[in-house]
Length: 114
Length: 111
Image: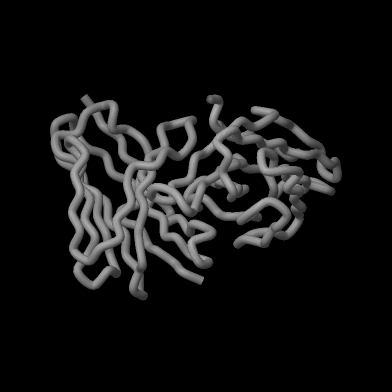
C-alpha cells in the first residue's frame, strides 16, 4: 500500500497563476483533509471532506477550492496564487470509525509563489 | 473554535537528557492525539488519549492526559538523536471529523 500520495512534490508559481494539488489514498478512508504548514504556525486546516460527496471549510479556506473526485482522491486548487500562499501543503486521510481516528499524512507539496 | 496551546516552542537538550512538552486547553477536551514530524517530513501519529488521568507508554515516551482533561504532556526519557523533530498535540473537533493542532514543540538533540 502506498498510503497517501501527493503530487507535485515541489512547485514554483508566479503571482496570479493557478494550479491544482493532487492527493490520493489507497486505505479506503472516508475522510480526507488539506492542511498548510507555515513556520511557527503548526498545521492549519484548509478544507476537509468527511465523506465522499461532501466538503467543508476549515480554519483558512480563503483563496482555495477543493474537489472530492471520488473516495480515493481529494484535490486542492489555487485559482490565483498569492505570495501569502507560499507554504508546505499536506493532504491527510482517516477513518473516523476505526482505530484511534488517527490521520495519515502524505509527503507534502512545497509551494513557492513569487 | 477549540484551541490548544503548546509549550515550549523550542527545546535544545544534550543526548541522554529528558524532554517534556505540554499541551494546554481552557476547555475540557474529549481526546488528545500526539504526532511527530521529523525535519523535512510529514506528521506521523504517535498515540491518542481519551480517559481522565490516562497514562500510556511507548518505550522511552510517556503520554499523560490530565485529570481534568484540560492538559496533556509528552515526556521522553534519555533523549536520542533519533528523537529530533517537532511534536504536535491535536484535538478531534467537529464531531470527530477534524483535528485542531497545537503549534508544536521543536526538539533538537545535541551529542
